[in-house]
Amino acid sequence: MDNTNNTNNTADTQRVVVIGGTSGVGFAVAQAAAAQGSNVVVASSNQGRVDLAVKKLGGGRVEGLVLDVADEAALAAFFDRIGEFDHLVYTAGEPLLLKPLADLAAAESRTFFERRFWGALLAAKYATPKLRPGGSITFTSGAFATRPAPGASLGASITAAVEGLTRALALELAPLRVNAVRLGAIRTELWDSSVPDPESFLRAQGSGLPVQRVGSPEEAAAAYLYLLGNGYATGTVLTLDGGAALA
Ligand SMILES: NC(=O)c1ccc[n+]([C@@H]2O[C@H](COP(=O)([O-])OP(=O)(O)OC[C@H]3O[C@@H](n4cnc5c(N)ncnc54)[C@H](OP(=O)(O)O)[C@@H]3O)[C@@H](O)[C@H]2O)c1
Image (cartoon, rainbow, N blue to C red; front, side, top):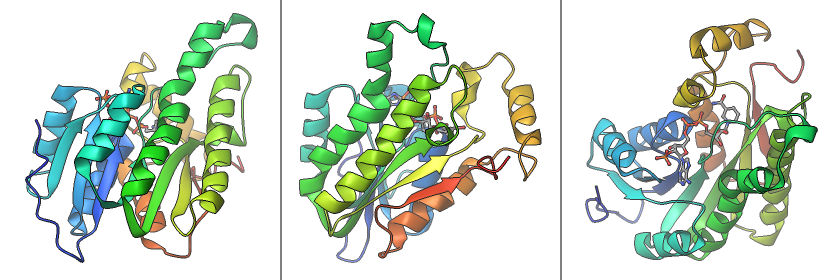
């Protein structure tokens, strides 16, 4: 579905673009931003998922576009097509690739950076000329950035890279604001394709946390919305992990 012309932006209505906004955390961000009165663009690589997300978000203020973030030309064309907007939220990604270093093949290791790191960097590059004054970019990191585990070298590297990118761009692109959310375990569709029994996995993950449960997409979305809305927040990596960093 291509709903690009469905919205009617007024001078004071914010326009929020969520890459990865058709599922999980990104979908919850899109939902929360729309509920606050923003016009929202959701994008991801699967047409069916884009159509379904737009439908679930109720159409109206929501546009949906197909975009593969591993395709640089598609990213450039995407931002040319959507024009000016206020906030970019980047949640596109996949489950972690957990393997001991000895078992990691070079090609799969490099490919793993395509969506969560190179896609984020290139999205920032092509989005920046379209972001209005007062705008922001919010990336997605993860708890492995500061608390890795054996077998998580790629996950730790990719999340730490995203956090480094966040700080560097907060300086380079200022006064545009650039932040990231460092997520702990969140109950999303991501786990359906990552572990054989998502429910018991998430229950076990949650039971080891100070809050004794994993987070919801809505709780995660609130962290992104905070960073979008607080004009003093830049270079910030906001940890939302149920206390995992302490456990
Ligand atoms: N859930 C957690 O516990 C957790 C914890 C820490 C970090 N994270 C990270 O947070 C981010 C969001 O997680 P989530 O749980 O919301 O995942 P999710 O529900 O699986 O959503 C991922 C989104 O990324 C999109 N996507 C995947 N490949 C893409 C591509 N090549 N181009 C454009 N879009 C693409 C997916 O849509 P399509 O399939 O249509 O492309 C989907 O909309 C991910 O980077 C994840 O690794 C999640």
